[in-house]
Length: 586
Image (cartoon, rainbow, N blue to C red; front, side):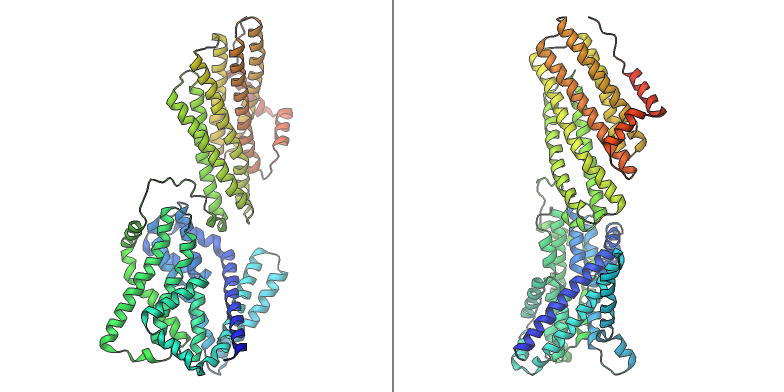
């Protein structure tokens, strides 16, 4: 083997890995979102999880991709650890499909049918169809299918190139000595694990071993521990993906590693123990591509058969390795791995935004209650809630901006628009809740009070604000345009009330019925109540307008205010009557 064969080998390996990557990405784009929904839902038992993991991995041709998805789902709370274990086992079996596909390159014979199923015969045709679909088809689905065909053809061409490049190694004694060395189980396992860990794909490393097998120097005795090591090496991807995740996600990744290590130890221990008495004659025989596929599949099937009934034991082992602590793990639902599954990511953002809305609602109601019943402990809680809402806005906003950059369905795009427009309003409402609280605290600390007339007016206004909050937050959580339509008439009534109360406040100042100090506090209350109503209006408009596939807040509000229909006017008049201020007494 000369330097040019080495160059050819490197080029073939590059094409092989690139083809596998292109094909995998095409498969995931074409079927990924549907498969991930299945992955999430149909896993209520280890056996169902095993079947789901097997099917998903067989389709997307990557146990690493499946396991990374699982780590992301566990991290975000979509999936429990015990659900993940069965899927991981199924993924290990599903990845063996690739080895069987690659073994087709080793078919020999002159019959038409054998020639027809050899990849070297049909791959050029697939490449031609694939490139036409990628370059000339407009639909995303067609382009994905074209990428799958093109990736498969490149992969097979790379496999053929590697096979041809290594054939001269059959006559190199040093090469034969290397594989004799790998008959030592420990060295063989290490070699397989290191190679797979570097390229992060057991399918690819098995393919490389299959290419080397054409030299005739790879024996069963050498291939067996290398294949075991390849299964361990593929865990590197999941372990890397678990960096920065919560403890359960790390446990999911460590379960993958434990499963393969325990399976390797059991398989090799049993095999060599039996061999000590039986002396299997085939260990010195050369292994071919089909033989490698058989060993790869047999190992994974036997490991799964032995360990599937003991999923709870693996779970306990993972918990023993990665112990619980009291460390807070908020916002783990916003896992960037879920950006590859936009519908799931949008659903996670919706859940967290609802949590944010609940906290905001509690903060504001608590602030309103503080007007007459100020409590220092509750004041501290409201301040903490406001800080938490700020964190929600920061985390959600950053994540949703990233999510808006991926391909979304129309429904998901609408939902994301609502969330992006409303998180800022929730954050501002929480700010106003703190402002209201501080005004209440100032009055409490200084032991000052408004006049009975001013107190009565503020109580009526706060009742109106309390109602608009309740309607708005229900409209958001239920995504109800009907409830959303009830917000703007009440917001207009609140605006009218605050304008009237400001005029009365000035009159009280002029008649000496209110102090300057109380006047400032009174005005702060009015300003914050008015701003809260404005933000409620914004949230309601987002719910209404996005449901209509448009988003033009100003246009909607202008239309409502200038040409409000009978329903709007009826609501406005009923709110006006309900929250009518008593006659001023000066």
